[in-house]
Image (tube, rainbow, N blue to C red; front, side, top):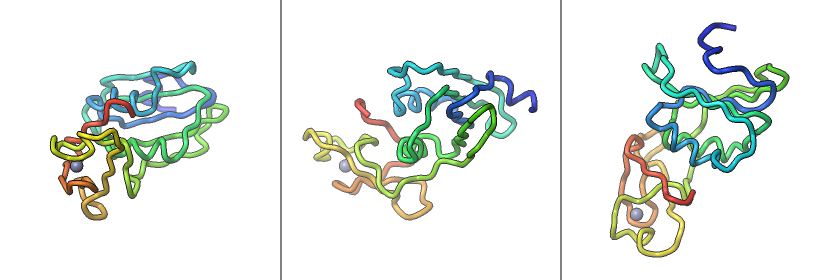
Length: 154
Ligand SMILES: [Zn+2]
């Protein structure tokens, strides 16, 4: 195993999330509700990355997430790689994939939008497939992926 992989200790079983932009690490922690988890969690913050400059890694022992839980992370960190680890071996590795629709996750930047004035879930879709902006399904406001804010109570 190469030295860079060892910057954060290996886990026997669980999930590894790699290539998280460091400025989005705490969004990822919040979206996966890691702060409420009893599992052993190792976080590498501001690690050097040849590709990204700075990246973060999260390793969660004895925890496997659903595709929905992982793919929602693509909104704040489209280049995350997730690995499923069993007996110290990577048995699955894939990038996160943007879901068709994001429900109750992204805050609408339009203060007049009904989602900011009624107790309801927001709904966003990609403007076009492969685009880098989301569109509110209620008021049609566009949000660049880099500017997305996550709702308070995800
Ligand atoms: Zn809206």
